[in-house]
Length: 468
Ligand code: FAD
Ligand code: 2HG
Ligand code: ZN
Image (cartoon, rainbow, N blue to C red):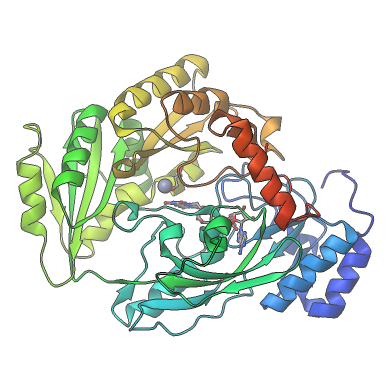
């Protein structure tokens, strides 16, 4: 806990919230609060006087209105699996935990939709709809902790984006409490509805800066009955890109195109205690095809056979546990990095034709500027999105990204210079807010500021996140 001043109205706020929500909704035992003040990577360690945990939308609205009255800043938090420091109170804000909003409706087999509270985890949703032969379009390794509200707030991507798009494409309706305390609800789930501004889309990806998402109407997908996964060894990044592009062009049932490059594979192999079934010079591509009622194995084999001549070494899986064990060489990377050190994480996207040059320049640039740094590159190659993780020889925990400026300048400037984005999926958070002007014009940032002022006039909601 640092000596930063707390809002003068803090005690009045907490007492008002206790009266409105019940005293059990305000947690201030330091041991409990500390569980909410460090991010998943352990890089961002904040502090907070209390965690407020409402159980319904009215409780969220009461909390936000009271925070406005007393000048208290709030950090919305779901599963706290975000990777850019956006869900932790880096400046002593009160944490508004949404985990209590965990009600889940029944899946509607006609519209293929479901309504869920924002605090429902992705894993709980997957389990609920699976019994009905349905699945969800976004899947990611943090599934048992991350919440649907947090995923919408970050517009999460994940491993099936190449098939179903990001979280925004799954949202058919939303209920939210805006920063001024007003409740906006549009949960009808109509696929066609051109009646003005799309507030659900605006709040998706807003990282808790405009309001709190309290419930979601979500699109569901039929669970593929047939899946086939191939691990392909590639000579280099350019080869992996060439193959990924051929698969995007030629495989209608494509379900995932993921890549793991050199040292990242060695790291995850050490972490898992086993080696990938095939060796490769430069990298590995994991390609999944999936369909309902039809086996896409021959289609996948066909597209690989008509690919580059060097495609010779391929490991294939069609059933668990082999499929899961193969996926782990990609999915367990974040965990493998976390046990190795405190990383600086980047989730950049670059136009695919320039990807190989970007990976070459970023790895050689990092080696030159940060001797001894461990650099791991992997990601959603089919989407033009790679994750660059950098563990500096002496990485430390910090309150704000400014306290330990590391490779951000190099990696983000390079990505922007290649015509890419400084965030393809995790968002800007506190980690990258200084760098937003690299990819957004002054006019765009000014529009962002005016939107925030309109929906959150008191500057209550995550005021130190996203905007520079
Ligand atoms: P939190 O971390 O609690 O919050 C994230 C942001 O959303 C914060 O700014 C917070 O203030 C805001 N927020 C949270 N809930 C709400 C709400 N109800 N209303 C308004 N704002 C809210 N991301 C990807 O995109 N693709 C991946 O493949 C992926 N894989 C991951 C794998 C691992 C192992 C981990 C740890 C993380 C991964 N992530 C990935 C990152 C992360 O963004 C997602 O896990 C998820 O979107 C965050 O959900 P959460 O509930 O934990 O949100
Ligand atoms: C993934 O794709 C996640 O696995 C996390 O987005 C990436 O650990 C990372 O950098
Ligand atoms: Zn990712």
